[in-house]
Image (cartoon, rainbow, N blue to C red; front, side, top):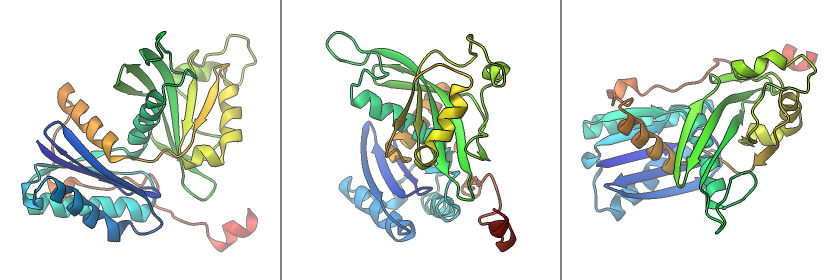
Length: 274
């Protein structure tokens, strides 16, 4: 197995290479340098394995949503590499990669808030809800929610809502929660496990997002800062999809970005009326 993975949908430029069971990652926070850095970062990692681009057997890329320019860079790079190496591509949701990275960071920290721990301090098994929100500008966020189940180092994600671009106080709630969104009740429909917020949008709009969540659940809400799509998580999600039989490599032309909207800025009239 020789897979490469990368995501450029946010402020991070994250590149990884997996050869057999070994994974190496170059993950950097950059400002508008993704196009210049992506291929050199990948070349550096391939050199560590003494590999050439033609030996790549699969390209995993962050398909978005996120920065319009960033998701185009990743899709274009995936197409070019797949054609050059005559291999398949596989697009991973950048939001899903962030959700997994959020849980991975919490497990690695061995925190007991909210991860359950054994008496010796090792994380054993827990379930929590992860809400991912990327700042989409124009007073909106790209958002979705997952249930994350953890057993040791194994992380399983179940999508609760579809990816959408929405106002930060109008993100979709799981169907099971909707019953009491507008009903004052001591029996809330939301989850009993903790809810973790991650992503730049979650940090920027933390207060309004928490208010929406507290309208349907009494669960504790935490914010996990500095979470970005990470190549390690893209590779892990691709491996999981392979083992579950739900992954199919696609041809290079199928490496398409996911924008969720086709408008990148407010008009002057919209800005004036805001």
